[in-house]
Structures are given as C-alpha cells and as structure tokens.
Image 1: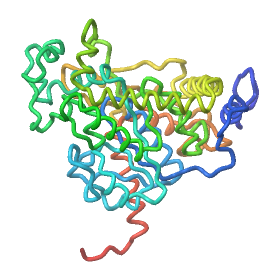
Image 2 (image 1 turned 45 degrees about the horizontal axis):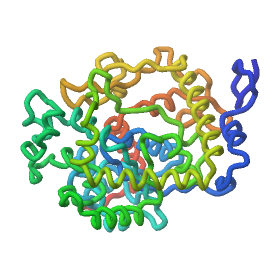
Image 3 (image 1 turned 90 degrees about the vertical axis):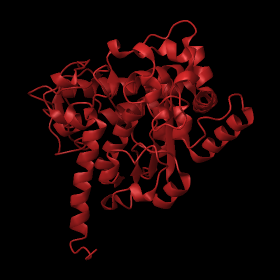
Image 4 (image 1 turned 60 degrees about the horizontal axis):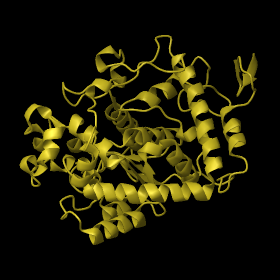
Length: 402
C-alpha cells in the first residue's frame, strides 16, 4: 500500500492521475503546459452523436471552475426552444453572462456571438450518417410523423420509399432527413447532388468551429479538445451516456447504409469532410503521441470507474432498476430502452476529498463527482439552473420592480 495523491491505496506505481497523464504525453508537440485553461466554450449539441457525453464533460468542468452555463428559460424545457434557431431570448437571465453554452439548439452564429464572450471557441460533433440515422429512427420512432407513418416501424420500408413518408414542412421533420445539417443551420432539403452547396456549407461550418469532433474517434477527438482548450487530462474523463440497449438497436445490413447516406446526402458529405479533417489534425500532432494519450486516458477512466463503482465495468441498468431518480435517463417511448448507471449503496467518495468536483489536487474522488459523471442531461440541467439562480440572487439581492 502507498499514498497516491494523498490517498492510501494499494498500487503498483505511486503516481497520481495528472502526473501519469503528463508522463504519457511527454515528447508530444503542442501541449498546453503552463497556459491558462480556456473557459469560454460553445458546444453545438447535435442529435444522436455522443453529444450528451461531451455536454456532461462541459457541465462538470463549469462546476469545478465556478463558470456560468447558459441554460434555457422554463418555456424551452432543457433545450433552447429547439428546433427554432438560437436566440438570446431563450436563455434564462439568471444564467447570463455565460461562459459555457452546451444545450441542444439550432445554430445561429450571430445570436450566439452576441451572447458569448469574445474569444469563445466553438465545438461540435458528428457521427457516421448510417449509424446516426438508425439511432434517430429508433429513438424518435413515436415522435416524428415521417417515421410513424411507416408500417411496423420498419427502417427498411422507410428507406425504400422515403418520399412517401417524409413531409418537409412537419414539426419534427428534421429528425428524418439531414439532421446534423439542420442542427448546424443548413438546408436539410437541398436538392440532392448540389455539390457546390455541400462544399460551401462545409466551408462555412469550418469557419465557425475550431474543432469538429467525430463520434467514432471520440477519445482521439478529446485529445484535440483538451489541447484546444488547454485543459488538464482529468478534465475530459467521462462515461458514455444516453445509450440504448442492444434490443433497441436495428441491424444495418445489405444496402441499408448506402441508402441512408443517399437519403442524408448532406450529412454524409459533412461527415466525410470533417472526418478527413480530424485525421489531418491528429497526424500533425503525431499519431504515436495521440495513441499514448488515448491509452492513458482509458487507464485513468478505468481507475475512476473503480473508485466510483468498485468494479472495472459498471453495470448498465434500465431506468426502473436505478434507485436514485436523479440518475434515471429519460425514455423516449416504450419501444426504446435508454440505460444508465446506479452508484453502489455504500457509494463512492470513500477516498475522501472535498464536497464537490474532483476532490482537488490532493484529494480523492467524491461521491458528488461520481454522481455528476453519470447524471443524465435533464436532471443535470435542472441542478445547474437551481444552483446558478441561487448564486445570481446572492449577487443581486435587490432586484428591480420589473
């Protein structure tokens, strides 16, 4: 047994998390050592791309660093009145001026730049179009009319004749075609094959976003994200959130992936463009360097999981099985099961540390840290709104008559 970061545990190598991460990163270029952390971030949360996991990273970072997160007014729910284009009117006044923006919205660059500080870095994430569309079809099958029209909820049938079921003017039609293009402010119903529009839209997107992450290369994307933001390795540790059970997934066989890409041709063009861009950035950093950091990141995450759950692989549970209602994920319908995590009864935080955050440089992992890592978007948004409203009222004890 030895002391690691001020905590007595049995280990083979007596090094703390951050020092280990730095050791793996030695020799890599463009490390943000010695630079202050960047704290102004706008993350455009796209649908069914792993964006909930990124949002959770940003929520936790904001809490740990006493930052203000822009959150929606009650009339908008936990979204910024999506699918309407973003407006400053959708932001709760007690969450301004914000440092971080990361709830679902449709991109409106002008409005976001008016709200966010100068120097804000813009980030988003894309996912391979076939996998993303299968997830959309499954997740929104009972909400999107274009999907509900299909007999027996058959993805194969929808893709055979998508124009038979799709209505561009309907409220939720953005889930049924070029969803990412729509989220990024583009024309989801652009005439297929308009190569000039696809090129110009990709270029416009590149001008706005400093980093476009790729879901299939999530950890590699996080290596770039932490360098962009000058964050510590432990700032980007995570557990996957908002996942479906295997039974809720549809198998993509035969011609289905090609049919999905053809129907979502703009999303496919965007993905191909930014997937190639991501790998160019990784190659400039050095693939061996990236591989080392990814390997260390996963080891650090395994350590964190053991601290929180007492086991290397936490058991995914249905909402009904999760005792703590604050950790139960939202269920889109009876046909789709979204799983989450439940912390052990004797819990985490046995290593000590403070009342929140990572427990500090010299502390251990707190139960609060473990809870926040697995807390679904809706509950975490409510928690942040409550805490920020209290902080706002303390700073403004004498409100105006209005």
